[in-house]
Length: 199
Image (tube, rainbow, N blue to C red):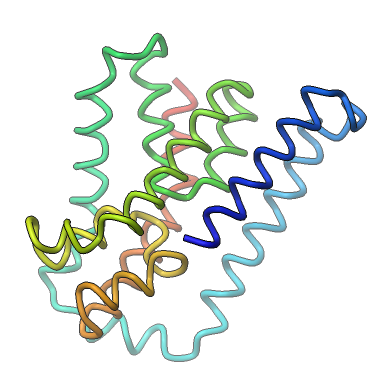
């Protein structure tokens, strides 16, 4: 929760600085966003590669749980389609936003580059909200939908920011599942976002 609030505070600060023209407009150029994105991808790869037991942990996952990331993606798209009539944007644009799967930093930068700042902001806020909802409602999800539901709800955040609440709620035996799920989500986000942004 603390991490989400920090991200939101940075977003709000940037918004205010932009509204009141406190920084040069050149700071918002796509070149700057591109370099930030490259740095972000480097650190994601570094954090995954830095864990020596990652491959061993993945081998212990039950075969049925391997399909959890796929069901998370399908469920996300079903939710997007269910509420798409509420928005003026095309279905492909909304599916691009949903393809962020909670990975707000990466997806918002990509969508801003492909589709503009309005849709990029929507992606940022919707994916931050996904994380916050998971952090706040994980016990409720567990009670009504089972131990895998907080993991599915967390999307790409299940190997970092929502990992502690998932382990505390679903149990330590689901820590490997949570890491696996987050890893697959992190890997697929740039491909899915780029796919739907190309329409």
